[in-house]
Amino acid sequence: MLPVALAALLLGLPAAARADSLLPAKPSVDMRGAPNSVVELDRDGDGKIDYRVVYDQAGVVSREEMDYNFDGKMDTFYYYKGGVLQRIEVDSKNTGKIDIWVYLLDGTYVQRYERDTDGDGKPDLVRTFNGG
Ligand SMILES: [Ca+2]
Ligand SMILES: [Ca+2]
Image 1 (cartoon, helix red, strand yellow):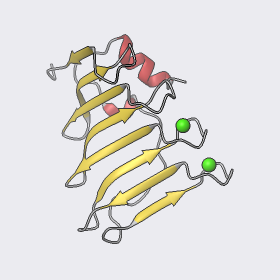
Image 2 (tube, protein in one colour):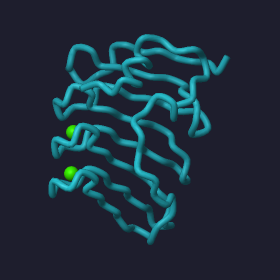
Image 3 (cartoon, rainbow, N blue to C red):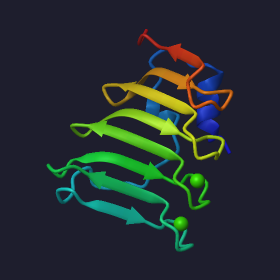
């Protein structure tokens, strides 16, 4: 299932769209934690982890993973650098393969997205936003 907001993303966006208006809502967690620690949540209580935060050696968030459709498999991945969101990867077709990559500017604005529409694991649709 494709998150509605991401479907909107693929249909075309004004330049400099805010990423947080397009993505599935995440639980609010601290962006800082114990060094090299991992926090896992089972948000729907089915016994399967559906949200995970990984902190780097400095205790800054380096990655988040989310099981958006609660099927037990992580499908949305958020990658950080220095605590700033850089890239989001989504397995929108639930195939276990990433088919959407979203690159952010300043952790907030969508700079570029790429999509793999034929399932070969490589992006074949690329759209770039120059921030208006
Ligand atoms: Ca769960
Ligand atoms: Ca899933």
